[in-house]
Image (cartoon, helix red, strand yellow):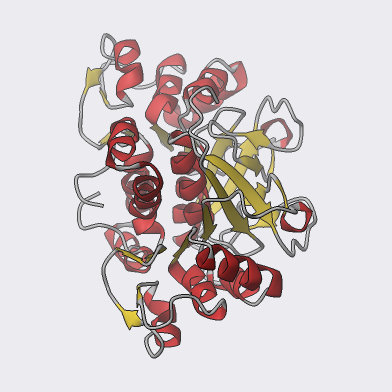
Length: 194
Length: 194
């Protein structure tokens, strides 16, 4: 794209990932000229992720083909309970998320994807939110919030498909500032409250 | 799915379709147990639609392989300007939309996808909305509205990615009633205003 800002995002997708949370994250970040890579893991059908409601998404590449993760400013984990379980239990992803957090990068997770924050041992005791379905998995080890999006120590968490625009715009604002968020919002015709 | 309600939807996708509008429509309708077919047309890469922000979606089948369109209760056209141009200028789609409208089925279009309503010669003079980017193409032949979703004579139109949840929930409500809409909304953690 012509208007690159040198920010890079990695969105991890697998079978059972929530397709709205995945696609809203990718699309909104790309509208902000963030260079987004959709990386697949553990795909049963090889070429695409079969998402939670059957939408088939072809990743840009396989996570296992990426050798240098230092270039990414944010790692994004979508929800979808089955997908979140696969992603959060993957040792490669756990290592990647822990390393991103330790080196001051953003880690962002929405819905059930938030369990990957816990399995990577990130920001324990810090503020977090999630879909209510995984609240019980998180509330003992985190300061659990019910806000629609939570930012704490470069960990961005959110609740579900209906908060995915707010989640993605918060990532944009954290990486590029409020001005970029305000620039890309009007063409999407968003509601006054997200 | 166990809870089928016998309603069927056809969502048409092509290169340049807006991926959020496509996926939110498909996902929300499937949450309502509507049997959704994602049908591709004119795909340059064969196996998938390369959407407006680069997300690659594999359709369930090619539109040209579908022989009986009478089974669909609603035809859904997503936006994305390039995709909407391809879809709206396709003679097969024009015939399909006109026939669906004439036989009392719903036709639903969002964002720039609304130009397909005009090219199919449907409900001229009736109420319509769209993304502002195609307002000038529609306002001379329709009663143009700026509401976030408009339902008129079984034609459902809406404005952009940020109104896509409202658009999809309106389709659900029109096909299955307010109760089904209210049943599927809370787990998505939608904002109080859409």
